[in-house]
Length: 531
Image (cartoon, rainbow, N blue to C red; front, side):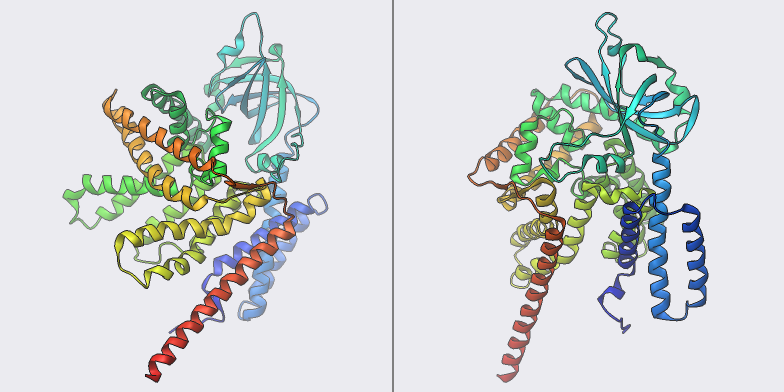
């Protein structure tokens, strides 16, 4: 049997992502105090040193760690250089595409603009700004604004304002991680429509796909609104199935948060896993005539990957959904090789790929929560599940305990971060998840089937009524749990050091539980041998 020097040797990619994150944090903290050319020189020097010490395990490992950290610093440096092209505080003429649905807010219209050209020249890297456009009372040109339309604007770009201290959530960090670099207040005389097709041609392929899928999302969301008799139910369906939470009221969002099930509104592994299972069953039935063909599994996985990434583009490519898509892509590939499909290495590989594409995702709350939840499930779920699994083989009980184990494991990993960023801990999260997760699975299955039939057949009558009723049941359950006395603990203010100490305490508690369990096992073996 192959022996390792320790548990971490089993997860080499975990060590790499730790060094990469460390380099990103250092590069962000000290940005502006180092020279990019010197960084490249240090990187080249480390590569040379690594070649000479490659046969020495300790020195090669240390050199590789520093090399990866240097990559993190370089990534931040180049990302900050891209952000520096956004000129703040001076009038700028730019051409942009509207990449979010314009929202009528009193005297202004708010939307997000993707800047493609600035000062008459294409930008090196496209970036977004939050635009607030003042309505014109006479011609009402603001009504021409729509998703995907092109604008030529002259305005002053301003930095993100600090948010009220109601939580630790740092909006500026989140905006930078999502390539939103500035705000802009635009007067009616300072903008006009321009040819959108010409701007589309200058976009990267990914952004072209995203914008076209956003138009599809708008059309499908409108189909949900038409099929649902209740507007609030339709908006909740848009949030659950399409990831569009713009129309969901603050009251309902707060109820989901208090009940501890706000994760069902943020598309993540739960949703993508349901979609994957739905498509896998559908494709398996459609291709059952070719089940004896050797290339059938490969064809199924290829179609699944195309469909999954199409769905990711459709719902907006948030950090959590991209993480799930990358992991499912790895799962699809290694399933053909009969290897370990889901592991900590898979999660680490996913994180490395995402950070290489955008290092500032380290500061994205959804990125942190998503990875914390999945890593916690990998670590704690087998231990929690085995408590009951070793004592019974009754399948309904095991299924119920599996759901409980996943909910508890995910909560353990995310609770310190949720308390830090939002100052809240939901006391009835377990009850909420036991009731909501099975229901949301049914809602998502019917919603996907309904969208598919709507595209193929047209107007339907029976399924929309069922889906609307289930959505009402879902909202009533969430509202019922949120109305319980002491449904949540509010106003929790933690420091970063306290968050780290909480995770250390959780790790020590987990280690103690495993040790006590091992001692009980040895005691039972010793007692049985004595007999």
